Image 1: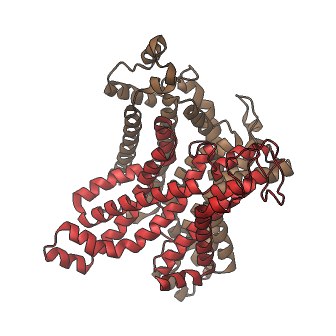
Image 2 (image 1 turned 45 degrees about the vertical axis):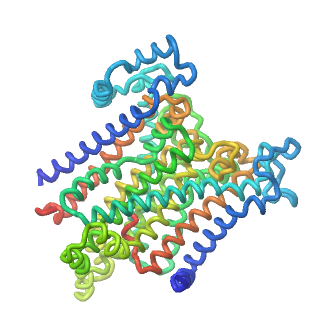
Image 3 (image 1 turned 90 degrees about the vertical axis):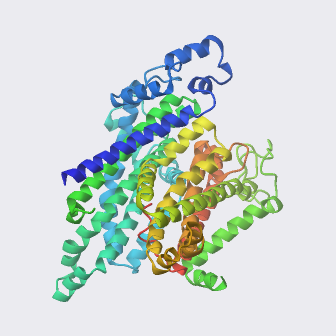
Length: 316
Length: 280
């Protein structure tokens, strides 16, 4: 058991190391370097020299990679080229805002999706299921920026219930943020609910066809009790993995949704950094997102281990 | 082939999917002949005109005809994502069949790397690569193809392992067949159906990704007519001129839904159940 947990941690650590190497290597592989790509046609003379000195580009790549990783582990991500400040000073408030948005979306979406998935799975191919499944298909296929634009048109432009874009000064309190996150949270939750619901539905249908559910039925156990005691707990385990995988989508979707609503989170900061060709900033945010993602996957793995005794047996 | 088509159309969702997909591809192909105006021609005298007999979908902030732009708006997206989907299916399919057949150490270690690739948020990677290599099809096609190919690889490898365990593959191995004939004559014909459906499904997700990139400003470049880019450009005037945003949204969403429904219907017609395979 403990060995298994260690293996999961080991894989998570391997993944993060792998991701950081690929990210660093990708930037190293570009023609020129961080400074020339930032300064473009001004990349010459004293400006270039100052930038190279500040970023420490005169040292070998391996040394710089080591420093980058060691710094990141301590929360020090280097120096932003555009903002001329240490990156960690710039990201923490943005990080809080993104965590607030993503956290609320996940907290709303996961229980709702599990409930709807059970309903759809139990009422397979009946009107309730067909309605839910079609709605999920639409939520998954319509791009987030389209959904967001439609919501803005209805609730911000026409009804004027919520602001169309986020207008808060830096350092705003949580209470000031709340009216601004209603629409982004709805957009993010819709897609999350759709993905998790579909998996939960498939998983419920799978379990409903199993021998032990048939057996319980034959024994005359009431259907409600079968669903509560046998179907739901067993259907949860495969759904856990999908919950973790949809977090990956959540992280990517957050970038688009933040941009639509001009929300001051990590996503908009990253997009701005790409416009500015501020590579140290882009790398830092990509690394933070990856670490969160791997962490969520690890949690899902550990939760599956806790829920499913079969996974703890040898040979798995 | 004709029988397959009949089975697809027999379900309403399949018929809708096929109809939307064919409609959009025809529109994209014939756009230059159908469009009443040049999609990039600006007209200072016709800025933000509401839909009328002359401009069916109105005009945008630069006086360009929205109908002509919507007709042309899918061409780049379809071309880029279709190439990327073919690339993803080819490399993911080949590698998946290879690892599923070979098995053992090679397979185990490679899957660790595949898992590591699957457990990184690929859009962020794409953004990182774009910030290095610049936006545009040259960067986007290989990157989309590579990352979506990894997911194809995972699914096909799982299916290939099941095929590899069957008697005719064991027989071929016992006959002393070389690896390549086994891959191409025993494995591939039994996996081509899954590969086709998988590729089509990835295509619809790639369209979603590419249009999001265009929306963010990293896909199509102005003045190219592109649905995602059109939404981004005309979004500021949502309250006064919603037509500039509405029609590209409808066109884009209906194409993605169409391909998705079609892929699903093809899967069902071929007897594949994708319900449990949506995870990766």
